[in-house]
Length: 602
Image 1 (cartoon, rainbow, N blue to C red):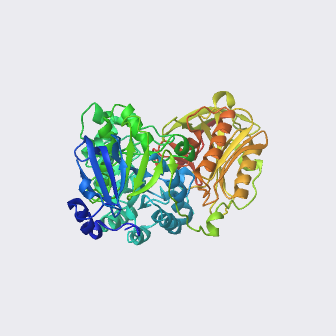
Image 2 (cartoon, rainbow, N blue to C red; image 1 turned 90 degrees about the vertical axis):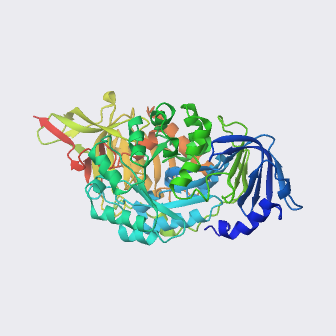
Image 3 (cartoon, helix red, strand yellow; image 1 turned 30 degrees about the horizontal axis):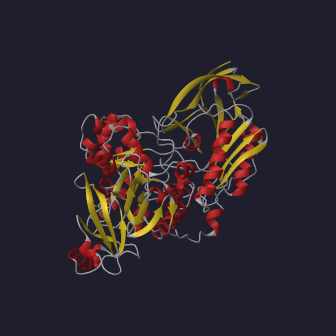
């Protein structure tokens, strides 16, 4: 339990006394339209009384709860809705620490987050998870941690900084604030009955925790049924209506995500809006939102607005972002609704469709008003070693990024990663490439660039080179990032080998981040010194640098929506079809390392 919030049992004597009129509330919000997500009603002219950080009375008249020390807020008909919950997300994708992420999203009405810090787990192991968990517990809103399950995400296909095993999962289940097991990304391992995956799920089940899912395959036959039988209770990787339907029919929650680059709500919410499935089986989430999205567009308020625009009834969309989420994690009696005993997380808004966030309370305290945060979000003292994690082992040169053709070939058929806009999956392309002086060169006319993965955890000096299509880059350029889900080596995409080398060396100098180069000069930089993933600078400052980075990518010819998010997932070896890792090119359809060339002709 958070140190500043008494449990329901501890608060019950006072809550009872306030509701009965024997004691005064701390706060009474009068004359609101109470959005009741239990009954799916909007009830006008209701009062809400709060004491000890929890709701004490929700009814037509709270005058009996008001005493000399009670603060009274006149809602004047504004809608009172529960604080919004994000059912699945990665704080690191915001490029921010938990404190700065909280500071960014509180004004948008997010008061509860269920976070899986598997990005930092891949870099720093259990130590990194504990640091994230500890800072999360300091915040004025609810940040529950799911212990990462898959580091590496696919054993044998990538190498992480630190692996996570069943003993780590079992240890973390005893920490306060741990609410479940993070997304079980190694779905082939679950399907095959892998002993480690089963042991991790068993440790979570023994602790009574929720097991997160990640089934990134379009196959809804026996493999999907085997995965569901293994224990994952939710899944956010669906991209089709059929995916959502299949999941809820198997007793899983279908998590519909709208992140910075993942637009998967519209295709799946029709299961509710058109097919009429019970909306209790559906949860809204973000998965990955970078700082620019958070600062300029919003967080869960953005997702709820989008679901409504896709045809969802506003009250149903709110259920998907509040009570459904809380119920899924076994916290329905603790949060996710405006009802007696629950944490007093509440938003006042004038419009359920446009969802402007006028005022926000968390645990009965005012935390934001008119887009301004009103509370402090405490930081940990992050140790020096977490700022020294980018270790390529040597200074790289242009020769490290040469793609050599098979001996004697003048044309080859190459496996090329094909980027799919607004979706996590890629396409496995087979393209004929000309050989010049024994090398394969980028082909601007056909939108083919180079991609390289630079090992950065153990200083091996290793570089794996491949090809990628879909970014639209023109001229001599490179984009490099130490955010490379999930192993978080360094990904460099470019058309110029000198620029690729310069970009990689620059990130080693600054301790990680994202850098954009054109014609031998750096044109944008986002420093992410904490594990090469996050900054502890204010969200607005990081977002401004991220905006310049996105604009720089556009100057290079890229027109993709949130191309950086696409860039950062090119090493995610558990999402089809083709990825790159430190071990080579990975065919995710077969879960095996494959060669860059299919064949060649002399």
